[in-house]
Length: 342
Image 1: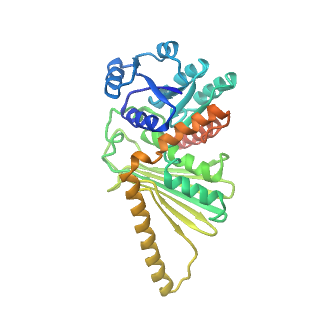
Image 2: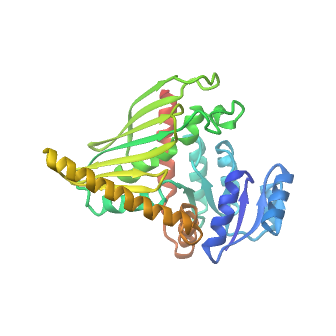
């Protein structure tokens, strides 16, 4: 399948590598409104063609997939143009920033029923989250009671620290840019029918262009709650998902790709001491596996590869991709509600 990228920013390099490892897929063109960026990327990665216009690229190239890697404010018009041209679409998260824009994309899909679309939910497709979801869906955690997600960043966060970064012009600012990550994880575990129960914010840092730099949000899915804490004031970055079930608790560190299963235990000192030893052993084993993964990353399937494989299989076998347009739509809806409540 022939693939083209729209947007030649930093994330495009990751997509180039993922496509190269996908197999039976060829990156034949790149596009950027700043033509010199497209030309430079094409030269560095030996990509045959480059363009400054999506319209020109669609007219001149025989494309199976267009990957849209531009700021979210441009997603809707670019996706609609590609869909109306009959080209399948992969979008960097989120689908769009607003429900109104998402409606436009889904309306285009409804009119062009043969076209497939997915969104790259990279954190959901990481190795540890895939394992966590398998355990949850197989019933090994028991009934899910709740989920707690912490996405902690330092003051050196590249987007937050740059007062001119485009993310600050979004609804919700930097939070609006990244909230889809915790929301789609909660969706995957509790279902798409989520409601926003509470949103609280605080200002602790010194960046005048960020009215809030701490956020707590609570979502409900059935009888279970999912909580989200985002901070831009921490001493180190950490992304952690804790899943609480009636049989087991899962601690998932998506920053370091570490997963720990915690079963039931007693309250005595002896039980506590034994549990501490077992926990240390589990941490060492998980860390060792993680180190091996990093050493042999080129041969392992990355989250980005999984997104491409999912879309390619969806096209070949006419089945839904792992991240469906409907799931992506609900993510937009919940993020928009959180941002309005800030």
